[in-house]
Image 1 (tube, helix red, strand yellow):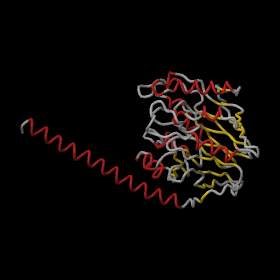
Image 2 (cartoon, one colour):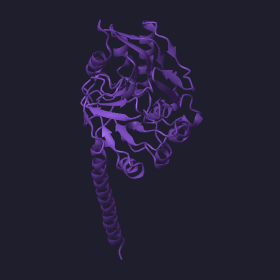
Image 3 (tube, one colour):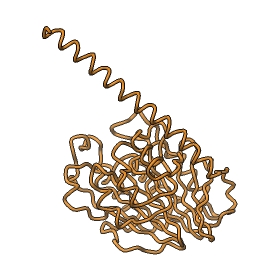
Image 4 (cartoon, helix red, strand yellow):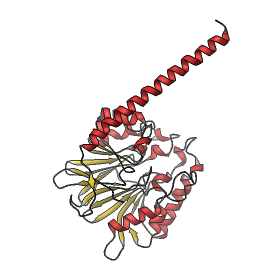
Length: 337
């Protein structure tokens, strides 16, 4: 066979192999979606009424597209984990809209006192990516919001990799947040506690607070703080951007242990929710801050086929509240924004 013919045959074979792989992935993705829809229907998620029908201990997962903003509520006290996408992303100025107005409106609607003022017992910036911390300066500077303290690790360039350099504005974002906090004399806790602490009826635990040298050159996601929140027999893990490909999942999973609800790490992108991680945590519900269609097929497969956890999207349901009842249940409600 001539060399030219051999190359042509190789291209044909390669095309059919790639096509077969893509078709297989597509079919498996359809299977996982169909099965997940069945799991989700069993949750019987109803619209939120804001009547405290399921108690006063709740996690509010705001609809901020593929960015994180989670308001914690317990006994009339509030805290905020991440802030959602801001309006001035330095590397994606036109790709995604910011959610500054929507986040402020929701916080004030939900957490304000009779005078219209909001007190946040603490805020947490899980890491210095704009889709997690980009809206904090606006929140901090709002005259009607008082923040008692801020948990923010000191930013380090050690984690930077080729895709996650200063062009993403991580350092500038960190400095702007610290400047805003200092301007209002808000205490900044950079050495995060490694022991669990009480927040009203909830117990909170930070993980990945002081990552070892594994995170060097792995990107800012490797520096991401995770938060485990527990009430009674039920617990949730808010994974921020903790992923397997940075090594953070394996380092953190034993400290996390069994949970009931998982806020999927890194919005369901390829490096998150490994089989080993899910087998250790055993989540029964997965909340995704993203479109279902943007979750990578392998992540959907792991959650649906390995963990058998229904995936509930904040985008598809316009925000989600997870209420932790006094009878050790987690009840989901939707359409909160």
